[in-house]
Length: 240
Ligand SMILES: NC(=O)c1ccc[n+]([C@@H]2O[C@H](COP(=O)([O-])OP(=O)(O)OC[C@H]3O[C@@H](n4cnc5c(N)ncnc54)[C@H](OP(=O)(O)O)[C@@H]3O)[C@@H](O)[C@H]2O)c1
Image (cartoon, rainbow, N blue to C red; front, side, top):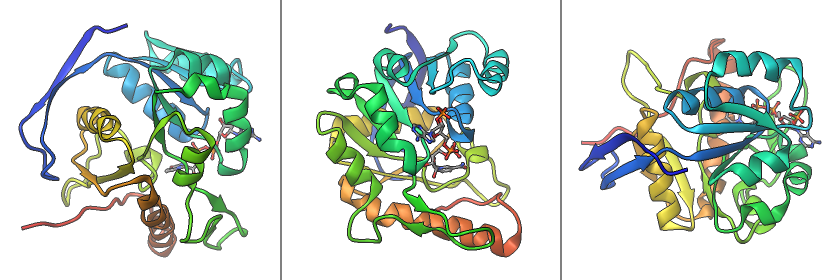
């Protein structure tokens, strides 16, 4: 499917990236049925993309409820059906289930495709305690996903903000930035265009190994939230 969608037509976004292209409607497969998958799924379906959420239980009550609010263009399926249908795929699974989800999705279904990795490789330590990172800072989930799927074009994205703010972020104190990284420049252009259509200025930090910097930001986001008792915050890099 390659219909024309809302134009992302800015000669210069706040990050300094030059993005001047038309965003095509896409078939987007989302692996996951949690808060992130459902929030992004609704936001992208509302923009006109055909979105299929993948789950081990595609007929679950929560996905039936999601379908009724997501509207035309939204559907659910198995992990394999979502991965197969997606020209672009979003990975939104619990870290400990991610390798299994990718196996169930069929690794051949990722070859050559842009894969947005929204996961955080968290190890939970108990209520009231900050989670640890499964890889410390000498490796990362983003790099592990790229190693699991060498033929996919992995872009780390969305992991530094709560699901409630992933679509058209709105904060009275200013617009937050989405920080991304990945090895494939064209894939990052596609993701940048998609992000801009969701209301995000984008900063490209570099290769997928920069996930080692982005994933700890999730812990910072959680630490601040626990400190102030609210989850309504996001990061921005101030420039002059
Ligand atoms: N929540 C947020 O605000 C937020 C923000 C940024 C990043 N993240 C990251 O985004 C990812 C998704 O977070 P979430 O809160 O939306 O959902 P989640 O509860 O962390 O993950 C739910 C998904 O993981 C899948 N899953 C769990 N165990 C599995 C297993 N053993 N095998 C296969 N699949 C398995 C579930 O599959 P089924 O559908 O089959 O049950 C479900 O689709 C996480 O890595 C999280 O750290 C979350």
